[in-house]
Image 1: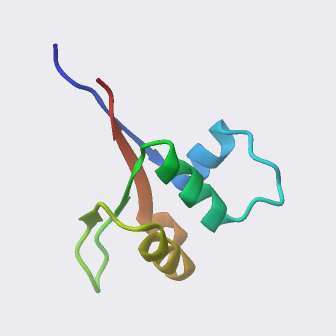
Image 2: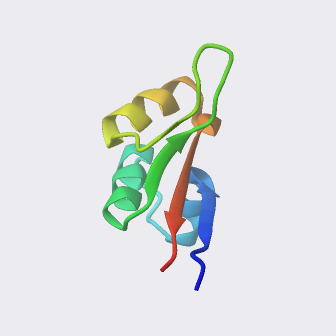
Length: 76
């Protein structure tokens, strides 16, 4: 049986979790990480895309450009 990979933006993940409005984007990233999502970034003119970011790295990137971060998860 093959494994399926799911990819989602931080904003879509945030909406799917129905998190309270007071939850910060950093909290959302940490929540995703705890649930087993891998934090990734798209490439941009100054850096290559990466997989397996730490929560702190993802938060730092999001401060510069929130559209660069996305989540992936492999289904079993």
